[in-house]
Length: 552
Image (cartoon, rainbow, N blue to C red; front, side, top):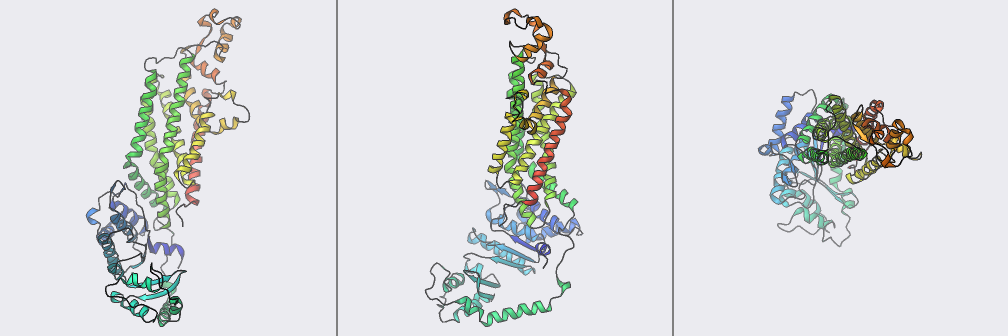
């Protein structure tokens, strides 16, 4: 069987499968049906099929319940049945399950087995590994493949009514202790072959006995007969790797991820609240003095701009990591089932973040910009909003990129901290650009915070003629005095009139940053930040395309 066709025609339910907590039961199953049933099938037909699946698995009464997480939502047994329904929604020829009753009490296990019995009766082959089943669960199966340690076959065939065939076969060997009345056949068979907790002392090799038994001969003959009568045209094959087109994949994955985001207040609400709090907290410092008068006031303003941008960047990167990690791991599961490829999830992760990034940036800028007392000019306001948005976008998408490449959020956060640390040190505030030595100048030109800060400073203080009194001995003091009263360059501080050491806010920015931050650089700063976002998406593209940390 061709591998991709085999994956499309089968379903696999993991022992501890997970689903998105923010989606309802119906939405979860519908997504599977939309992505795994052929695109030629009308949507109405797919939705009717979903209704049938929910009824078979006995989930129709809770179809509109959110899946939830450990703090609330579906029970463990209901989530187990939901995972079965997700696979059944693909209308498979065969469904594999890894210990479907593990972790369930007797009642929950019976519900799961009742659902599996219905699936088998509908004509779908059900293959399951089972661990310490009860008598009722064990006798629910039609056939058994019993392996001993090392993977050698001990029994393979029909169980028979109340496991009669299995018991009759094993008891045909004199070394087998006969089963007692009421004893669990599953426990008895393991004890008989020496695999149970009270293993037998005799060394009878049941695997060797099976290899020479009529039971194996009959099994091989059946297999040979099926192979001999099989025809090429009887094979289940699919023309395409995926059931739906790339466009449909992108649209449906985006719609699904949008629901996840809108129903994730712990992520998005926190972003908005933090943006508002940071804006009001730092903006309130300047509420009483909205117009700078001296170099101390200017330093206070640029430092506050630096801290707020850095704070929002750190928050954006750190908060996106756990959200992306959860959906990335879900993508690994969906990718294995051939629901969609990495391009669809990469596009969805990009588009779904944009509204929240823009909204958080708008909340911050509205509360911060006017509180600080920046110029009430549309051009300057929207440039500030643009740079804050690009900053949040850059750090958010870099966080996604790191999470796509690295195994867990702790590792991604470590590399993110390194990026933010280098950005903050060489962003041009802690160390002025003209003071960075040649060995480290590459960091100044490489890390993104510099371009955010340069864009914010130069756009806001362009053509700003607010008088700024220089501090004695500062570069701005020397430059201003040299331009106005050069004969007083060596005069004591008290002998120099204020009009000789008063310049503009625009001049202060130019001098303080060594002439390296100028308004003409704004287009380049915008271009760099867009480029940084592209690089971040390329990192995520590489990680989603090549990595799978859930692969066994």
